[in-house]
Amino acid sequence: MTNLIHILLVEDDEVDIMNVQRAFKKNNISNPLHVARNGVEALDMLQGKHTEKVIPTPRVILLDINMPRMGGIEFLTELRKLPEHKSASVFVMTTSNEESDKVAAYNLNVAGYILKPLSFEGFTSAVSILNHYWHLCEMPQI
Amino acid sequence: MFKNLSIRIKIIIGQVFLIAMVSVFIYSYYPQQQEQLAIRAIESKIQSISNMFSIGVGIGMGETDLVAVSEAMEWAHTDSAVVYISVHNDQNQEITSLNRLDNNTTAPLPALNKYNERIEIDGVIYYKSNIVYQNTIFGTLVIGYSLKQMNAMIGSLKRTTSYFCLALFTIGVLVSFAMSNMITANILKLDQTVRAISSGAEQVYVTVNSNDEIGKLGRAFNHMLHRLEKSRLEMIRYSEQLKKQNEELNQFSYVVSHDLKAPLRAIFKLSEWIEEDLGPAIPAESKKNMQILRGRVFRLEALINGLLEYSKVGRLEVPVERVDVYSMLKETTDLLNPPAHIKIEIKNGMPVLNTKKYLLQQVFINLIGNAIKYNDKEEGKVIISSHEAGDFHQFTVEDNGIGIAPAYHGKVFEMFQTLESRDKVEGTGMGLAIIKKSVEDIGGSIRIESEENQGARFIFTWPKAA
Image 1 (cartoon, helix red, strand yellow):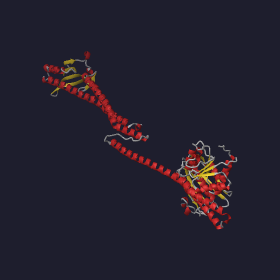
Image 2 (image 1 turned 90 degrees about the vertical axis):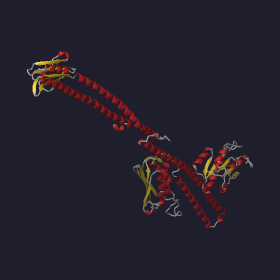
Image 3 (image 1 turned 135 degrees about the vertical axis):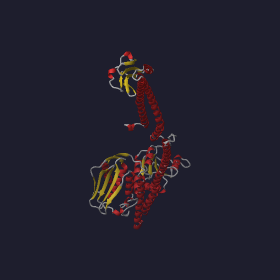
Image 4 (image 1 turned 180 degrees about the horizontal axis):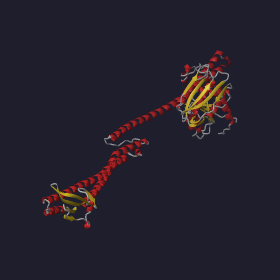
């Protein structure tokens, strides 16, 4: 697997974006990372509406739950309706420990629901585990 | 037995009894009285016949005046009930006689040995008397008076009276039914309405329009129903309001958990990155400050979590399940993973009950957790015991830790109260407040028995049935 898969991060908090970027750097993860600031923006980027389409299609999406305009669960609902993107692996990364969010997320077939640890170190190791995971998994070539 | 009858039946029974009494009285009294009157009339008749003869014989002054006698006989003859007359003179010779007895039987005269006394033989009254005129006895007179007519009359009177009584009784019973229906119809109406309401019907009102006590009762009842309906609607309004507020609170706690924590995390991470980016160039003082800063962030997050936990108690829908308290405590103590120098003892006699397990477990986790946390002894001890107290189980969590001075016993259950500075012992001050709320929400109570440095004993009651 020479071609690194593209990753889409859907997150509204600037520090959290930096957090992911720093964790990637720290773990020497060189997968291309695209950032959308909310669900609407992410859908636009995936479909090439009002903006350039992300090519190749991101196979992994890191998704926050609480975002302005369109939250994570709504985004997931829409995403699963798109034939081109419904097979993407979505990892929810959130501070929401609400049972209702977890149930809704797994009902939309997320690959994992991760509570953001408070410390950066915790987060870095979580990202490292994720990196190992998607390196291990074979993804379909589009 | 009488108590179980309906008012209607009671009224009917009472009235029928009264009518029956009146009927029986009339039937037994009236014909008897009439009979006595008739007998008295007969006696006076006999007396007057006797007088006639006395006058008729007496006028002759010893000699029988046959004309007077035959006149007297003729007069006596006109009454068909006079069936026998025999007149003797003082020489005991029969002067005249009349015999209209059935089959021409002779009068049983030998039986008449007494004078002026009525003797009844075979439905005929015989009366023997002296013929006296101006104190002189001129002879004897025997008169037989048939009771046949009187008996027939009395018989028919009895029959008429019995018909009358029967009619009176029948009409009385019918009237009593009608009356009791009239009286109890409204009561039954009231009863039906009350029953309909008590079985859950809504908007049902009493429709009794009479102006008597029952009508008044019905109106009072309607008034009560109006008020009840009003307060019911009010209650529905309040509960809807409460539901809305609860939803708002849920929303609020969601916002708190996410939106308040997000900047905290950012602060935490940024401080880490600043430290990381500066690398070895960072002054020791700044490094320490950064650590304190992160410590405070941790504390604020713990406080937010405590507040959320507190607001969840009572709002959270916790299922009721069968709880074996002993095995639950075993599980809980394993979960808390106490340090080696602290021994936790669970006494025998822990109950098995149906209750909200999550809440009970939270209470024990907090109490046992505190007992472990605030233990300064080399050999720490935590003892959990239970006994029954009426409708409740009383649980005691006892330790040999630092204890709490009595002055603070009221305060420890308040929110955000800690006995030590948070810098010394990290704690939110929410644990006991959450416990108290959980225990009181389910209907129990909690208190503390402790002296400083003498360990603490937390005693709480938990209802047997949820």
